[in-house]
Length: 319
Ligand SMILES: Cc1cc2nc3c(=O)[nH]c(=O)nc-3n(C[C@H](O)[C@H](O)[C@H](O)COP(=O)(O)OP(=O)(O)OC[C@H]3O[C@@H](n4cnc5c(N)ncnc54)[C@H](O)[C@@H]3O)c2cc1C
Image (cartoon, rainbow, N blue to C red; front, top):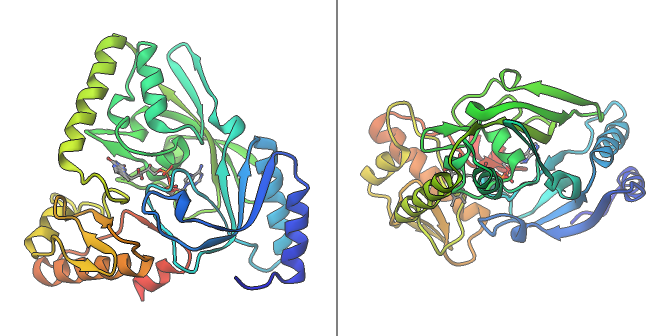
């Protein structure tokens, strides 16, 4: 890691004085994502309150003073990110404390952005409130799922989301409706922005709790049969192109089982890359390029990453 400049050291000192923020410097990020890949975060913060989150973004904006402010990004469960081997500069935040609360109010359920989505879906189903069952089978926080408009088995977050509280760069707290997010297939306008999702309100319907919990178990059983288990991964690496499946196209190119360093295109599902032996981010990127180039050449289809390439990886991907 580079030594902090005086202004970075000043920002760090101001952040350290914020109540509700626990800050670590140079913390390796491999333990904070499901790929188990990535170098250290310049600063990794665990934020426990909305007030602290707002103050952090205000301090960071002040530190910019006309220049580019330090980059702030949130890590949920890290189940859809590839983190560079050299790590991430700026501030990486994880939402805990207040952000892990769930509240029920009539047919609405309110959840902090740090709540694990499978846990929320099971708690909601157990209350006889239906709608989230199809979203119980993959690792995600509520915040990550909102930003990604995550979906499974025909249900997407946007189908159930009513509104979300966000904290904008500079620290202003605002409420956005689902339409404000302009949700599309695994996308919302929040992607790549410095706006942070703090909570989400979902609508549900009254129904049978026992049947809903049984549906969750059944859908999760079905998923286990199709996805690779045992090795760290981030689920689908590419978005499905319109009317087709990225996995089918990669498979047709004969790439199942292809290896680069410690990473492999899964033999079970061609749209999943697994870290089978201490893979680096560069190993994964090399396999992604191989798949993109082969599919482009053979089918004339340009595969678009579903995994979020963080830090310098985005520029390396498009270079
Ligand atoms: C085994 C497996 C199966 C999967 N199956 C599916 C599936 O069926 N459907 C599906 O849609 N996805 C699937 N995924 C991908 C992943 O689980 C989803 O994209 C998930 O919503 C990511 O949530 P997260 O909290 O882990 O976000 P992260 O991976 O931590 O972050 C993803 C992006 O969201 C941003 N972000 C996270 N939280 C916030 C916040 N509070 N505010 C602002 N930005 C934020 C991050 O900065 C990053 O850019 C799967 C992953 C795995 C490992």
